Length: 372
Image (cartoon, rainbow, N blue to C red; front, side):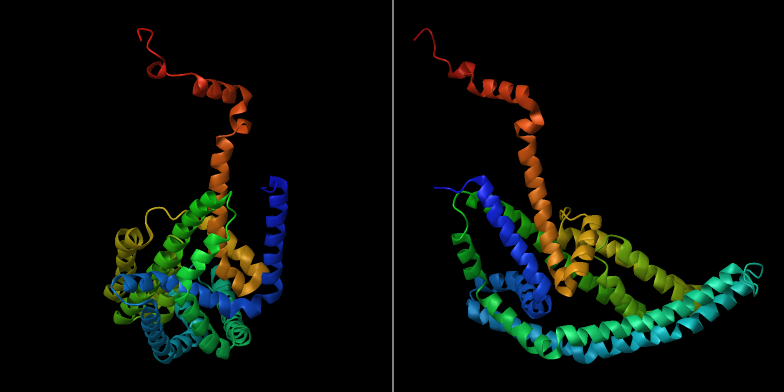
């Protein structure tokens, strides 16, 4: 006999509360496992495609793992040291850059940049604040990364978890499907499929877009000779998932540094601007439509709210689960809205009665022919 709806709500409410408590108290411990699961989810389509080409699941998993390990090692050896060096140099050079910008503005607009002007004092204060806070932020990030992620867990546990999750992914999905409540299994499958499409479009599609655009901006700015191009490209790629914000922030940084570095050489400044204009054209017309699709189902404001709330409550683990949770909530809200609009609570008792009467009235084609 099926459980009453009230008992089912109580059961799933207790389950959700226990899940929140586990994330709250064991967030740091669960971090490598969540990272491994996220990596396996990201790579599962590649394994499925290799299987369709005739490769076994074990061989596909081993091939993907070796490729991912090679990319990771090359990134650690070639990119991370340069990125850290440029980031530190950028924070260190901010006062000098601000002084150069002040001198340029003083030369062009002497009335606005006298010794006691508000604009000059604001620029000086901003430079000091960014340098001090930027250094503190960099040290905090490095310190927290060393204490929370733990190098051993990052190098050993995450790849091992990702390997076994990727190897057994299809079996786990099938096992979870067997455990679904039979009365609600069709609805749960439909909602899970919508959630998977939304998360896949965002995590896999937008993650690929962010990676490609980060590489594009870093290489493009480096080729035009802009200092700190790698850092600016990484920042731009990291926040490209927010429409227009990534290009706006990265373009402002690049143009600001470009004006200071190439003042008077307007061809170089134009090349810096051309890199971002070209990047927006590629992202908006090619990458996002092909990899993400026209509608992901995650509004940028809703996504930022989810990342902020889960990040504040559960730390880095919360930020990792924020996207799938936000997608799940969005799908369930849309489903609840559809159910509500089909209910008598929305249509009223008279509308529901008329609809029921129309449904019970036989159509002309269904009525018996009096001529026999």
